[in-house]
Length: 184
Image 1 (cartoon, helix red, strand yellow):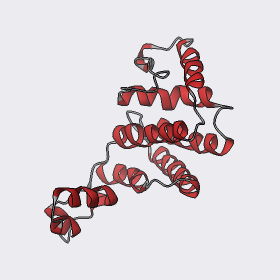
Image 2: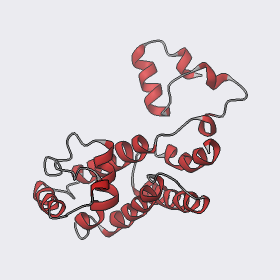
Image 3: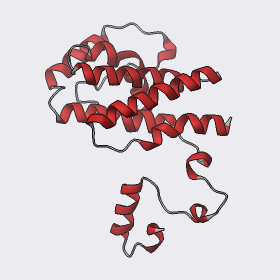
């Protein structure tokens, strides 16, 4: 229970950041299994977390330039989408600033694959494809058991590929499908 023994706020914050969890007395209870009993918000975890992180990595590594973002914005603007899609992301060229979770969903599920094909390396694109397939399933209003299993398989393959050449911890992604079954 490092959290409890953290001497200062900065030490506690560092522990929380490294473990991805904030201390709670529930964690000490023998009946409490945190991954199984917590509710995972796919919009925050998948879209505001992982999708955003992938874009930031591609920008930092120089795979996505401002010219690419302007070109992507033009591609997205050329679409005529049905009303249930929500607002078309309009801040792609500035680069993704202020996206809401719904805009990240639209970007990820609808626009990212065609906008980034041929721009990011094939290994990253194939990894993105797995993530998009999982997001498409997990962001639906209702899921069948088969869809949850498929999403789980996509997430696990995505995580394995991502861990192969990325540094960020992505353990919570693999808990999403388990949480869906537990809380259903």
